[in-house]
Length: 243
Length: 316
Image 1 (tube, rainbow over the protein chains, first blue to last red):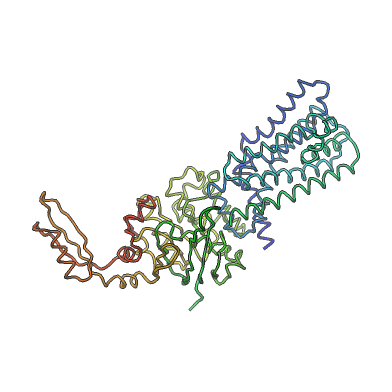
Image 2: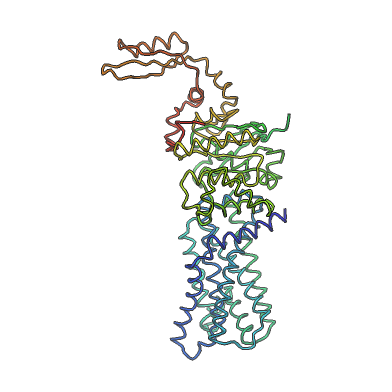
C-alpha cells in the first residue's frame, strides 16, 4: 500500500507540473511579480536595495508555490478530474501530498532561477548553501500546504484566489521582505511572527549574509510545523468535503 | 460457480441536504448481486440513486449503513484493493484537457501500477481498439465528444479491470458514437469483463444487459433478466394499430389493456371508421415493464436527462 501511495504521489506531482505549472504565464508570473515589487521598492529606497535578495527569494517561493496550488484542487473538483485520482488505489493523504509536491517543485524551480539572477545582480556574502537549500525546501512545502489548504477550503476558483491573496499580501508587507521585522511597530512585529514568510526571509537572510545558524534551525522548525499543521488541516477538510 | 462480482446488502446512503432541510435518502436499503462476466443494467429515472450506488461501490463515498463486497473484497475495509481491480467511466468525461490522448492513458496506467515496460504498448493497443490511433498526440480538450467518451472508456480499461462501472456511457453522444460505444461494451462482455451499466436508454439496456435492476427513489423495485422482467409485464396486452386518417396520412397508435380483446376493441375505436392498415399484438418491451413499475414514461426519463443521444437507435 505504501508503494502504491509513493508511486501515485510522484506521478500526480509530475502530471500537475506538466498539465498546469510549466506554462509560460505561470513561469513569467512567478519570476516577474517578485522582481516588479522589489524594483518598485528599490527605486523608492535606492540605498537599501542590495539586501533585498532574501525577501525576493521568499516572495518568489510564496507566489510560485501557492498561486497555482491554491486553484488546482478546486479546479479539478469542478471538472471532475479529481475524481479520477480518488478512484485510483491511493490514500487521500498521499494524493494530496502529490498535489503539494507539484506546487513545491514549481516554486523551487522558479526560485532557483530568481536566486541565480539575484546573486548575479545583487551579489551575496558567504552563502551557507546547505542551510539555504534546506530553508527553500521546507518553506516550499509550508507554502504549498498553505495553497493546498486554501484550495480545499473553498468551492470556487475565484474564492481560492481571493482567499490566497487575503493571506499572502499581509505576509508580503509584514514578513520582512521590504523592511526588517525589527523596525516594525511592536504590534505588527507580533503579527509578523504569526506569518510563515517571516521565518523564511529571516532564515534566508542568515544563509545569504551571515548570522547565527541556531536561528535558522529555529526558523526551520517553525516552518516545518506550519507545513505539517496546514497539511493535516487540508487532508481533513478535503475528506469532509468528499464524505 | 464463481463468487459474485458484487454483493450489496442493505446499502443506504443519506446526504444531509442543508442545516434547515431534511436529509436526502438517496439509496434506501438496496440489496443485489452482480454475477461475474455479466452486463448488469441499473435503470432508473434521474435522482433514483444510480450514481450514488456507483459512488459507494467504487469508494468515492461511504455507505451510511449496510455492507457490500466487490470482487470478494470488503467495501469498507479493503477499498484500496477494490480500486486496483475496477475501472470507472463517470457520467461526464473527466480526463485532463491539458494532456494528449496518449499522455492521459499513460497517466492512468502510472496510477494503477501497470509495469513501465508494458505501458506504451498497452496505450497504443487501446488507442487502436477505440479508433483513436490518429489522435494520440491531440490534446483531450480538442477531441470530439464521442472521441472523449471513447478515450475515457479506454482510460478506465488501461489497467485491465475485472469489473467496469459505466455511468450513463452514451448520454449526449451522437447516434454513430453511441452505436460504436455499445459495440465496444458488447465486446468487453464477450471478453469476460463484468460490467455494471447505468443508463436511461431502455433499448440500450434491453440490447446489452443480461440482467436489469430498476431503481426508483432509492429502492430496487425489480431485478431480473430482461426476458424475466418482460414476463412480469405480459399480464397486459399490447396492440399496435396503423390506419389512414382523413388526410390519408398514416397514423400509428399503441394500446395497452388488461387483455387482448379489450386492447383490440380500444384500438378499433381509435380507428373510428378510417381505413385500417395493420393491427398487431406486441410482446411487452423493457419500456413497458419500466412504465408499469415506475409510473414514468420513457420520454419523461429522456427529458429529465435532456438526452437525445443515440438512445433512440440502440444499434449494435
